[in-house]
Image (tube, rainbow, N blue to C red; front, side, top):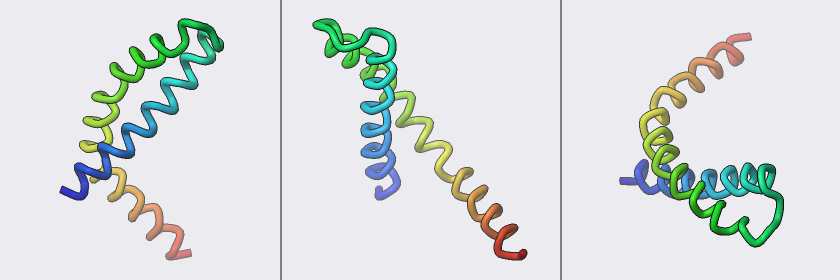
Length: 73
C-alpha cells in the first residue's frame, strides 16, 4: 500500500510540474493557460502513475547495482 500511495503522490507532483512547465513554454501565460495546463495534466497523470508504479522496482534494482559498483572502488 505504501508503494501505491508514494507513486500516486509523486506522479501527481511531477505531472503537475512538468505539464505546467511545458504548457507555459508552448503558450506562455495567457487566459488559456489554466485550461490547457489542466487538460495536459489530466492526460499526463495516469501515464505517470502507471509508469512510476511499474518502473519503481527495476529502477530501485538498477540503483542498487550502480551503488555496488561505486562502493567496490
